[in-house]
Length: 149
Image (tube, rainbow, N blue to C red; front, side):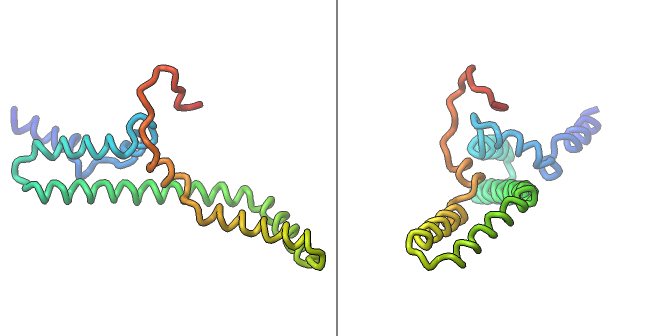
C-alpha cells in the first residue's frame, strides 16, 4: 500500500513535473510575489536530505530563474499583443512626428519634437512593468485589497 501511495505522491507532487503556471498565479498576487515562491521552494528542499546545502541553494536559484524566464516570456507575449492593438495609434503618432520633422524650421516645434522623442526613449529605457512589479515590496495582508481591482 505504501508503494502505491508513494507512486501516486510522486505523480501528483513531483516538483520536476510541476506546472509553472501555478507559480505564476502566486507571483501575480501582490501579497506573495516571487519572495513567497522562493521561501516555499527553499522550505520544500530543506526536507530533502540527500541534497547538500549548496545543491539546495543552486536548485532554488535555478527554479527562480526558470520562473523569471517564464514570467518574462508571458509578459512579452501579452505586450506584443497589446502593441499590435496600438499599432494603428502608433502609425498616426509616427505620422505626426514625421510632419513635425518636415516643419522643424521653427525652433518651438523642433524643441517639442525633441521632447517627445526623449519621452518615448525614456519610456523604452525604463524598466518594464514586470521588473518593476517584482522589484516592488510586498503588499500588507489587508482585507480591503481587491486584487482584481
